[in-house]
Length: 98
Image (cartoon, rainbow, N blue to C red):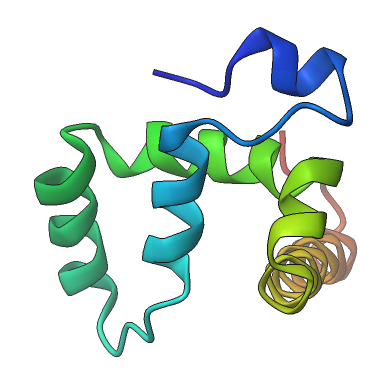
Protein backbone atom coordinates (compact mmCIF):
# COMPACT_ATOMS: atom_id res chain seq x y z
CA UNK A 1 0.00 0.00 0.00
CA UNK A 2 1.32 3.36 -0.95
CA UNK A 3 -0.01 6.38 -2.69
CA UNK A 4 -1.07 5.58 -6.21
CA UNK A 5 1.38 6.37 -8.99
CA UNK A 6 -1.12 8.69 -10.66
CA UNK A 7 -1.42 10.91 -7.56
CA UNK A 8 2.33 11.46 -7.59
CA UNK A 9 2.56 12.07 -11.33
CA UNK A 10 -0.56 14.18 -11.78
CA UNK A 11 -0.96 17.03 -9.29
CA UNK A 12 -4.64 17.30 -10.27
CA UNK A 13 -5.43 13.65 -9.56
CA UNK A 14 -7.86 13.08 -6.69
CA UNK A 15 -6.69 11.43 -3.50
CA UNK A 16 -7.21 7.68 -3.28
CA UNK A 17 -8.98 5.97 -0.38
CA UNK A 18 -5.77 5.27 1.54
CA UNK A 19 -4.68 8.91 1.33
CA UNK A 20 -8.06 10.10 2.57
CA UNK A 21 -7.96 7.63 5.46
CA UNK A 22 -4.42 8.69 6.43
CA UNK A 23 -5.39 12.36 6.48
CA UNK A 24 -8.48 11.61 8.58
CA UNK A 25 -6.35 9.55 10.96
CA UNK A 26 -3.79 12.37 11.29
CA UNK A 27 -6.55 14.84 12.16
CA UNK A 28 -7.04 13.02 15.48
CA UNK A 29 -5.20 14.40 18.50
CA UNK A 30 -2.97 11.63 19.86
CA UNK A 31 -1.82 12.14 23.44
CA UNK A 32 0.48 9.11 23.62
CA UNK A 33 2.81 7.86 20.87
CA UNK A 34 2.18 4.22 21.80
CA UNK A 35 -1.55 4.66 21.33
CA UNK A 36 -1.01 6.15 17.89
CA UNK A 37 1.31 3.32 16.82
CA UNK A 38 -1.30 0.80 17.97
CA UNK A 39 -3.99 2.75 16.11
CA UNK A 40 -1.87 2.64 12.94
CA UNK A 41 -1.56 -1.14 13.20
CA UNK A 42 -5.28 -1.55 13.88
CA UNK A 43 -6.54 0.88 11.24
CA UNK A 44 -4.08 0.25 8.40
CA UNK A 45 -2.56 -3.18 9.14
CA UNK A 46 0.94 -1.83 8.53
CA UNK A 47 3.98 -0.85 10.56
CA UNK A 48 4.33 2.69 11.86
CA UNK A 49 7.46 3.11 9.71
CA UNK A 50 5.56 2.32 6.52
CA UNK A 51 2.68 4.56 7.58
CA UNK A 52 5.04 7.49 8.15
CA UNK A 53 6.69 6.96 4.75
CA UNK A 54 3.25 7.14 3.15
CA UNK A 55 2.34 10.19 5.25
CA UNK A 56 5.58 11.96 4.29
CA UNK A 57 4.83 11.42 0.61
CA UNK A 58 1.23 12.47 1.10
CA UNK A 59 1.93 15.80 2.77
CA UNK A 60 4.06 16.81 -0.21
CA UNK A 61 1.10 16.15 -2.50
CA UNK A 62 -0.75 19.14 -4.01
CA UNK A 63 -3.97 17.10 -3.83
CA UNK A 64 -3.59 16.63 -0.07
CA UNK A 65 -2.92 20.35 0.34
CA UNK A 66 -6.10 21.13 -1.58
CA UNK A 67 -8.08 18.57 0.42
CA UNK A 68 -7.11 19.83 3.90
CA UNK A 69 -4.70 22.79 3.75
CA UNK A 70 -4.63 23.48 7.50
CA UNK A 71 -3.82 19.89 8.42
CA UNK A 72 -1.21 19.44 5.68
CA UNK A 73 0.54 22.71 6.51
CA UNK A 74 0.59 21.78 10.22
CA UNK A 75 2.11 18.38 9.38
CA UNK A 76 4.71 20.04 7.12
CA UNK A 77 5.65 22.47 9.92
CA UNK A 78 6.03 19.60 12.39
CA UNK A 79 8.20 17.68 9.92
CA UNK A 80 10.37 20.75 9.27
CA UNK A 81 10.76 21.40 13.00
CA UNK A 82 11.87 17.80 13.61
CA UNK A 83 14.39 18.05 10.75
CA UNK A 84 15.77 21.31 12.16
CA UNK A 85 16.12 19.72 15.60
CA UNK A 86 18.01 16.78 14.10
CA UNK A 87 20.29 19.16 12.20
CA UNK A 88 21.07 21.17 15.34
CA UNK A 89 21.74 17.99 17.29
CA UNK A 90 24.14 16.70 14.63
CA UNK A 91 25.95 20.04 14.51
CA UNK A 92 26.30 20.21 18.29
CA UNK A 93 28.08 16.87 18.54
CA UNK A 94 30.16 17.39 15.41
CA UNK A 95 28.89 14.47 13.38
CA UNK A 96 26.11 13.91 10.92
CA UNK A 97 23.21 11.56 11.34
CA UNK A 98 23.09 9.18 8.38
